[in-house]
Length: 328
Figure 1 (cartoon, rainbow, N blue to C red):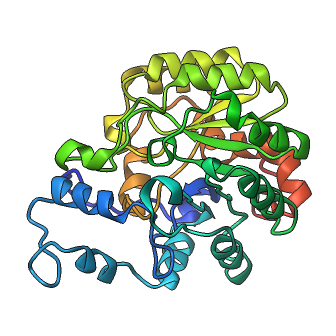
Figure 2: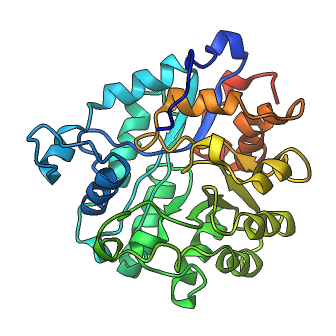
Figure 3: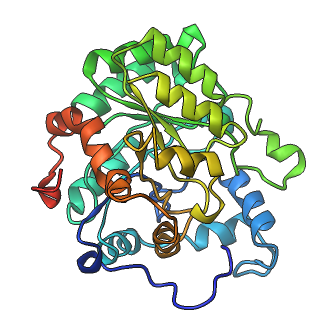
């Protein structure tokens, strides 16, 4: 985390005047271990070189031990006036690790409505017909909002025609998708990046093709999208069914072109995401307060754009939008 001087406490809900809608929060809690723990360990050693873990030996067991109880995530959301949408994650074919299941996410949402306002499913695209069946179950029976994909860990191209039945299903159901764009921190500092291709699977032009081929499929391009923030902006500008999201990077390091267009021609195209579980929520919010945004843009990014873009799906799956009554 970047070193900052002075008080790092963000505004309270009362001071801010609105709840934040967070479309991308990882439930990195007991039982919600991400299915790329080995790569996560490499990234931890790389980003926190002084970390040694409880054993002092920087082991995978040390990393598992540090995952908090789910109530910690809940209380963090409540304390900061954030309504989170936790995301599932399945990349079992490529990593061999157990998924963060759709049922786990659905149960979190059901158990803690004061913190969570809908959740996102995930399927492993390499599971073929099983993936289609699980996607339909998650979207129609569990009432999750849409599907989230992390192509670097899942090792697939979204514009590969063999995966088009997934996009067709989502389009038919009116369910949106989240696609990772740009660099991934998974495996950072590991030998060969722990086998992860850092960007090959996550190029914005692949998403441009899918958006053109499925014009009624709503797509959220995740993260700051380095090294292609300008290309990603242009995809969002060109395709009405595509928007951007902001997680995966400390706001103080956002590419200039990202903030420039957020303030101008793409002010209706950015949704807030915290990537809780990898970034400290209070510092994320404080750094957002330090970004210079034109009047009204902050509210758009923090909740209005998400409601406007995903409102029909929210209504269909029963997302409670009463915290924003009269604000959009």
